[in-house]
Length: 82
Image 1 (tube, rainbow, N blue to C red):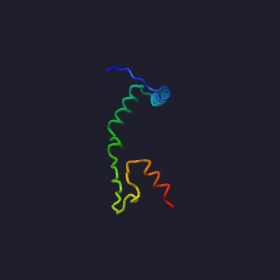
Image 2: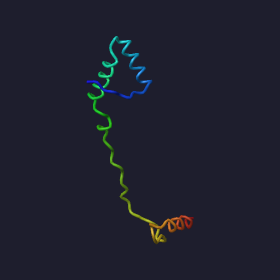
Image 3: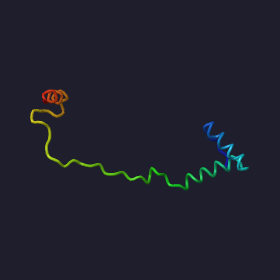
Image 4: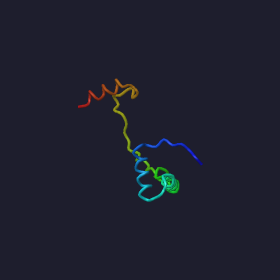
């Protein structure tokens, strides 16, 4: 099948050099690379994410903070800390 690809110039030059060195065609080099990429599972799919630690301690905001959603209340409480 014929198709048109937009390939980075530097990458294409390296592929052509490899093809000439191995006495094969550019098409064969591209097919081999594509087959290799499709045969190898993507590492992104195999990476398992670790669970984040959760703090189970007691406590909370200082009693002087009346509204925890208010930036002004939080800044005022931070100014009062000695």
